[in-house]
Image 1 (tube, rainbow, N blue to C red):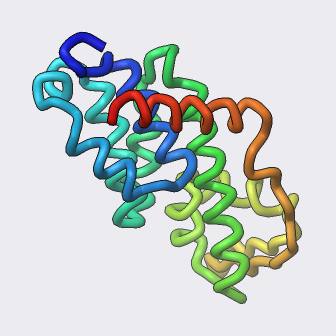
Image 2 (cartoon, helix red, strand yellow):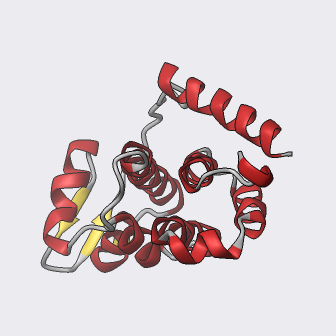
Length: 166
């Protein structure tokens, strides 16, 4: 890294990986350390951070709007996985917290249209009543592997880059 400043790609990957791991405090501190000149000249960094802000404030509209951005190839897989993981987390939280919830609320939590809600939740055994506009979640314990081998590699890369940065 020239002059102790990492490349925009390294900053982008590290920021996205922090978000993927739901490590929002470290993502925020990294964002503050990125030089302003890089933030201005590389819009993908600002777009990643917009998603991070949405996660920080639990603003699902901002999260899914940000995730719908066109991403450079080097960051696309991480951002796609972040979207999937956010949806899984939202599904789990809704199932744990509600016995019934409005269709509009489920739609915003999942970042899908009202028409798409049934396609997402019916396989989970949830009941969608379009006449009343309500959804009855069914909580089931689903264990997802939090770290796949590639994610373990990303975590190691994150630790390594963080070490180099400091």
